[in-house]
Length: 424
RNA sequence: GGAGAGGUGGCAGAGUGGUCGAAUGCGGCGGUCUCGAAAACCGUUAUCCUCGCAAGGGGAUCAUAGGUUCGAAUCCUAUCCUCUCCGCCA
Image (tube, rainbow, N blue to C red; front, side, top):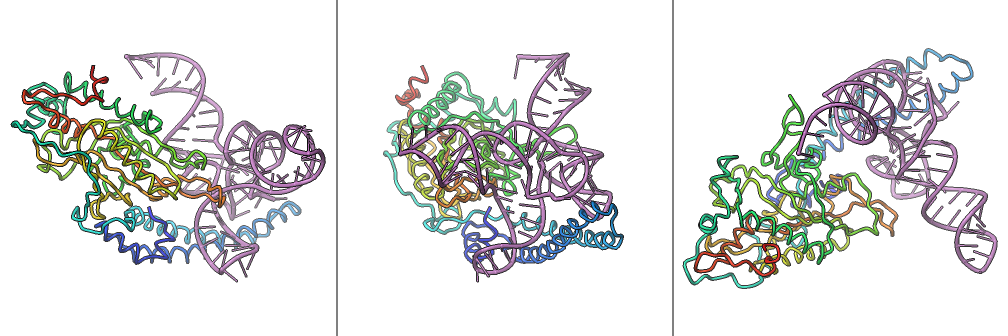
């Protein structure tokens, strides 16, 4: 979330940022609540100061005389009642303030194009030539069914639409890609591998920003018998558990940046996206993903974003998949992001670019929600870290792209060299 | 699932109704001593909110949320978490 003090002092800038994100929030109400709360807080605290000082005296009097004067007790009783009334109002306002604060998105950085939807997305570089296939290209579904790699129908039977089942070489490919990617990030890029739970609690979802805005897109679970759904969630990305590892912690400056990578399954309802790019593996409810998460010092976090993108690109280059790097415009960025690059790979049969990675800088937005700080050695102050994450990469779509890109005229797949050791 | 114990500052650990943001020890930081270091000694050492140009003042925080009380780290209730034992189990 944003710093309330910052909003108080820069309401116009915040309003512009919210609009650029295509979001809306009742800023005026927020500022009004804030002002009212601080006024009430002042009155409550003055009464508390009085109560504290009287309490002190009372303790001494009682120690020396053994009993308390009735009039003091009577007065303090009313004081406490007044305090309770003030505090109830303050609490009520705090709730309202938090609710609005939690619904305000992060503001885009100044070099992010301001635009509606994805109109302002900008390709900043490309790697390789989108493959042209001279023979009649088969799409990944056709290839998969011929080679018996995966089945959407089987998944529909045992679970529902959008849950692929992989068989044989398809299943093997899934495992191979996960191992290959993690090895690359650990050995070449210096990340520490993490294996994290696929179920998280509500606080974690709020910490990274999936809640409240995206709650209806998440698979909610009940905590226990008779309890309401929404105490726990299936993770939509490893970003959630891995970033929340540091929730409410103070990090050492010397340990930064902290770089984690991890594989988890990801679960998304994809509510409202029916019929939109949903063919085969292009949009599914459960998929595998290797994620990278970084905790960094605020200065230099933009370079950390650049290197994060490079780390993700490295996977695509090793897999020999031509891609483009897209800087997202303000309207296409996620709720918590301040700047974001997508990596898109061309699928020559489906004839579409597929987003296989999204690398974001969240500045201190998530860190403030999660209270992740570090001690700045120079200022000796506790400051919020900056958090980043990026897919490295998202599997279902990578499988789609690999199949379509590496098919030969006989409908066989010749996988890239880097993957061979993992497939044999 | 059953029975019990417990959650206090960076850590260990005292504190069972008032003078407690909290003894003591360790660790950290600064200093004395030393050629330097160790040891010893002295000092210092939480966070957040709020008012203030500042100096500084005030408030909150002893797992969390309520309650009792003039007053709660301390008493009561609920929740969460940790540990021990038993049961079950891949």
